[in-house]
Length: 342
Image (cartoon, rainbow, N blue to C red):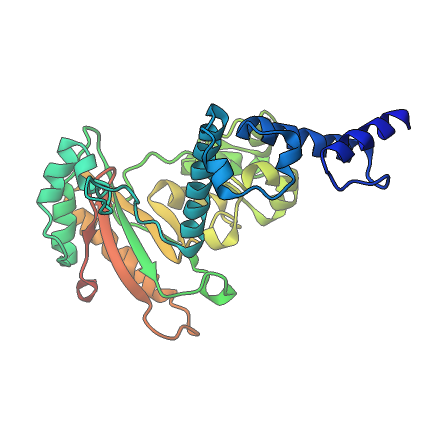
């Protein structure tokens, strides 16, 4: 209490309006503020709380602390102005020239995507006429000519559909057997009874039999591209579903990998049978062969694929079914295809 009484006495000398209701911290802060201001203005602390005319203050030379305060005030005003422009959505650069005119900053220079590609890609892209839709035969021939890789590239078709994949009857998923195959070496495993393993192996299965396939699955060695199973063996694959499902290896009747005739399913998978399905963006991606096939074989495979695609057109679909079709090779430029030539 003695300290508070001393502070109240000092505040009274400085003409501060404080009472015993104020805390010690509040009184100390008020006294400190008056003294700091008095030092800045180089006047007596008692004068700070009185009405001082502008002439009395302006006659005093500005101290360094005052200059710093002016700079801080200018920075604060600039910051508030910047925030106000930001809230108003004004993103125009505010730099000024010598005459005080606002100058806009240089526009960002962003190179086109083609210019950021390699020389081989740019040379291949130059062969494609911009905005032109090529007939299917010409597009596949051009795809072979515009390959940019040293290895045997895959030739892919990307088809945008007017379906809604969220609708069960429009979630397209099926298989098609290409007449000339895909050009890829497909490794097939047959999860069948050990008694039927010999027939599956004869049909071309790389691994066959319940015991042999189970050993691979237990060790999480998925050294195969397609897994074929019979309906009777499907319950035994349940414990491996978490490993097979995300990898797209779980047998499914829609893809033809669940069959009562596993030997025939193995033969189809090895002979060029491919599965295609619509993704979340309503686009189908499918490979129809390799560049080494040539344009004629690629065209045969493409026509077989489009016939299959038309056969699974949803009956509930309203509007256009096929919106756009593009052909491309691995790491190559896209080529738009005229839908009337499909």
